[in-house]
Image (cartoon, rainbow, N blue to C red):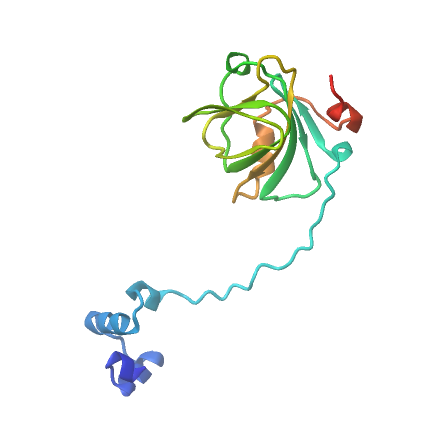
Amino acid sequence: MSERTGIPLSTIAKVEHDRLTLTYDKLMQLSQRLNIRMSDLFSEADESPEAPITARRSIGRLGGAIRVNTPNYEYFYLCPELRRKRMVPIVTRVRAHSIEEFGELVHHRGEEYIYVLQGPVEIHTEFYEPVVLETGESIYIDSTMGHAYIAPKGHDEALLLGICSSADDDLMDSLMALHGDLPVARPRSVKRLTAKR
């Protein structure tokens, strides 16, 4: 290290044993010759161990989902027994038929991926023109941007699989807060969700 930095070995030894402090000029010389930022010289080594394997697992069955019924959607929050999730899987039945009927666009933290299980569905977002997606198509959006999903004219409803994600551990709580005081229930029948109307 002495050869690479041009700083005498005795000086480096004194710094390592906390008997000498390098001047700004010497610190600059050290960082330039080692090709690292000066701030890296003062940062603590990351000694945090790798995140432990939690071995969490949950089977996402509609019969065990949390069901929330709103004027625009019928939500089925899957895998509800897992706490502090960073991804929340949701099967959603879309019932609103116009953006006027839908009302104010929805905003929440994170991002979301929507896959159309049974379409078509019209996607409205704050900064883009509406787009219609058919069965088997998908969209990925920033959820902080206002958004709404609409069953297009001539269609009773659409069925979506959504994955909401966020770095926040309380994502599920923040999503449930969007529903206010609406009743939360468990679905009675899986057939009811997928049956044609």
